[in-house]
Length: 199
Image 1: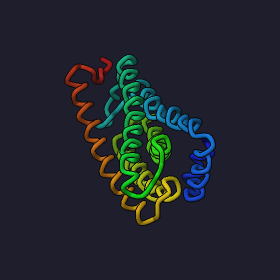
Image 2: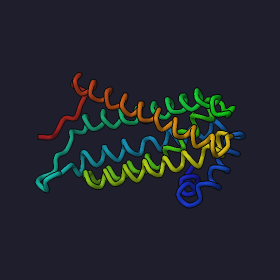
Image 3: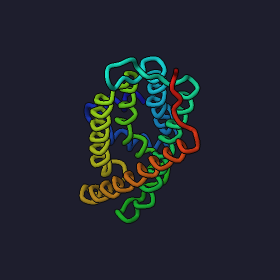
């Protein structure tokens, strides 16, 4: 799993070829990539929110209670896994349109690998800072989009041109998923499942 992370950062084209070959042989094993790495943002947020805290104006940092941070971290973990599974579902649903015969499992594994930079950006939550978080999120999204575009022909078995259109369609679907997650967050907060700050 770790060698794929390094490969995506240093030589992504070759790494997608490796992933494509390995999915054929060990498909189920590679869902661990999602299960393990999706925990990084939640764990880092938990540590950052309870031990370091947020300080927007340079005053005393604001921290969350341990119980509140634990709930928020657990919800974020399941939200990430759910989002990846939904993106895999979208990819599978669109695959026939773009000439791919990828299975649902392959589509979910592909979505899990594409999100690798976003998992790693979660490490920035160890030191909560709004500017640092924004820069990290933008960098993570940009690299995830890059991995999506170059990975399509390697893993989904489509031409570069079809892969470009396929990837663009998935980005639109991803924006819909993001909006749905934001709405769900607002609903949870209205129900009282939100951050509780330490006094």
